[in-house]
Image 1 (cartoon, rainbow, N blue to C red):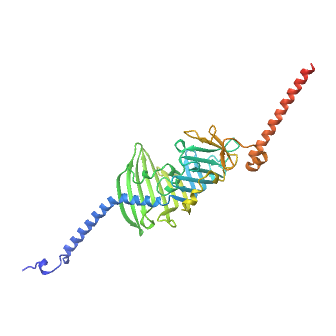
Image 2 (cartoon, helix red, strand yellow):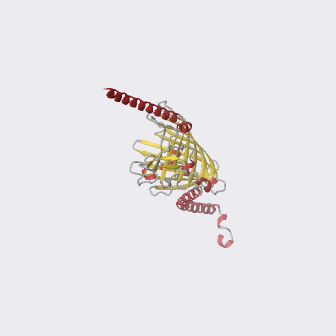
Image 3 (cartoon, rainbow, N blue to C red):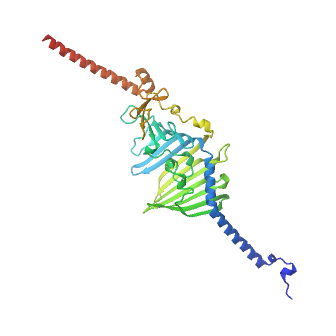
Length: 383
């Protein structure tokens, strides 16, 4: 009589074939469970990435940036050191350009350019440079409403590593362009270990009127679920652009967040490298009270007394007369101060010397005109 394994006490799993069948069933259940979790985890994972980055809403950075961009006329090389302050939507960047090599050979001298959203008011952008404008004595500063700003927006350091398009273009990027966006399809998530490093791989497709893109980014659990690489491949007709940003992250002191300390970016057009960036980032402070003090016009070293400031606004501004004001004694004034030639020479060098020579020439011409009138009047009197 054959033995009934259920009655005899033998385990169902003691039979090799049945054991293998059970293991396959468990594997299938595990795979289905992981797939279900992946479907649910994409949004949760992105929410975690953004939550951790939002804990660094107040941050002071020093960034060493080397950038190259190739166009129809050749390659532009830039080397700059930036001092950056961010508090919420306020951003100030003091960009000290050390080298700018133009394809034409007319290299730009070293200079500092300050651009600040929030130094005058929250909805304006202040811009000033100590590089003299061509054909003029000095470059005027400007204040414009954000809504009237026509140029690319200032880079947003809070988006470092959260866009594949590089640091210098972060001002024109929104987070929902790449995270939690609605205009995407075929979203997938997998978890894998490469060379012993555990990582999430998220990919999706997005399409607009002119082009379609494939976006892939990597998240490292070992670095606080921070993004280590983003890649976007865009196809528009017979042209393919590939943007890749890679970064190494470090935990911020005193915060439950990681932030990029090394960032590299490449852009290729049909396989040819046309742009690149390499950044070294130093986190100076995350003290919001200390960082807020940088958002004042009086804290900008290159804004010298006597500098003209233009104002482009949708509404009248009482601080300005006909859209112009002058920076005097750490405040804006509607009228120019009395001219002190010695002070002008001391503060602005060649501009003061040119101004003094101009006044001397004008005075001499005026004297000659008066002398001519007097002689003519004398001849008429004699007749």
